[in-house]
Image 1 (cartoon, protein in one colour):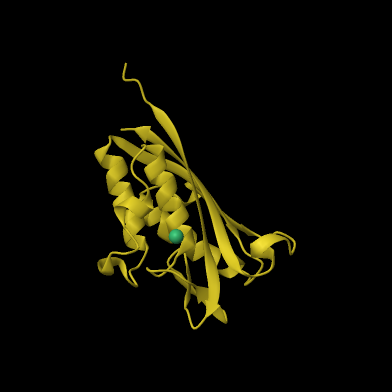
Image 2: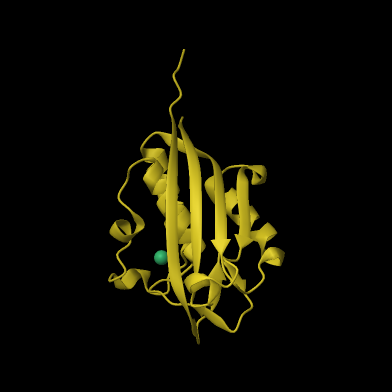
Length: 162
Ligand code: MG
């Protein structure tokens, strides 16, 4: 009998909000007066999820794979990072089974965008939409997210040996 190995990965990221930037979350462009600062498109959701996948197979983190000093990632779609992380997971003999993601933001309201983000994550990771947990929460005005200084994301992923 083949023994299946299960692993869990955790990812966290936060970016600062500023004027004159487009807000991109989970590959969706969100209508808002400010966007996230960063070298790439600053998609904090993709970054946290990418790190969760890499962490599940004990691979080097997103900053090691895609250094922010590298001009090729300037303005890059962070979807590329998630796609690459999925490849790394596969190369290590695992595949994603399920993810759960929480976006921590005082504003804007994200509920209208969640279905399309969920569909995109499902397609990139090759898992059903009902295996993609995705929600947004506020911190009741407390902390840097509560003051609207930035947006943070936590992500957890399960992978199994294939
Ligand atoms: Mg980041």
